[in-house]
Image (cartoon, rainbow, N blue to C red; front, side):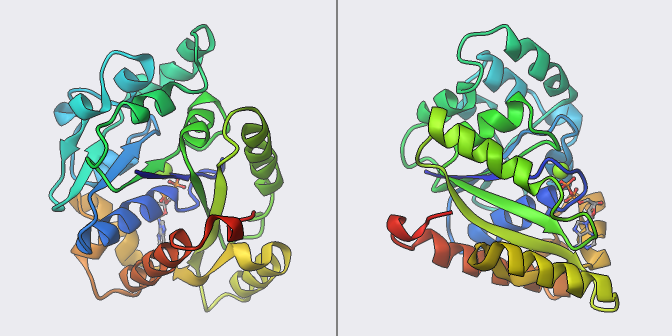
Length: 262
Ligand code: ADP
Ligand code: MG
């Protein structure tokens, strides 16, 4: 199972929107997809139409070792897309993990226990921090996808994220590669968006996906209907961008490992 952490310690940069819509695009082409919600806010769970009352077991139970992933997942309205939901309990996990053995590789161990072939790919929607939950995601993942908002401080904090990735590579997970950086919430009427996009490309080069996700109100409306934008409005510019991004992501996943230098 390919495991992709969708991470950026900044909040509101499009992690959850990206995770939900890429997961949906992959399910639509026949992949068996798991979306793991690792944010105590549970936005990915809500955005997929799973209310808190339907989240019987959650990533909290998995990370704490009270449940196996296979026993905690629920199916969604999207065929082939399963959800490992999050609840507010997860906000206590950062603190509880500190005192436990294997505090950095609990999620990895839970993934390793999943029967092979159950899912082709898992996207992990990370919380907006570099705490133990995000560390667990990065230790368990083979790929990192970083959504970056086209706003002035976009690059701020990225070096800290990349340093964390480097430390995790050295200490726990040498096979972690950077799949790419996705520019989100691009506003073509705003010169700043273009300037930030140019700046990010100058800085990060080929790591940045060609596809830029536009600011599009349909993307922000979809979660309130409990649906991925790709289903809520397939033809809106945001959905079209996520379909292109999914295509690019697949092409990168199929590259030889040697080229996946970060
Ligand atoms: P994160 O998970 O990084 O906190 P979200 O994906 O939840 O970010 O996005 C933050 C907010 O912005 C949400 O309300 C979401 O619906 C909205 N949003 C995300 N991407 C876009 C976009 N491209 N255009 C318009 N709104 C967006
Ligand atoms: Mg989020």
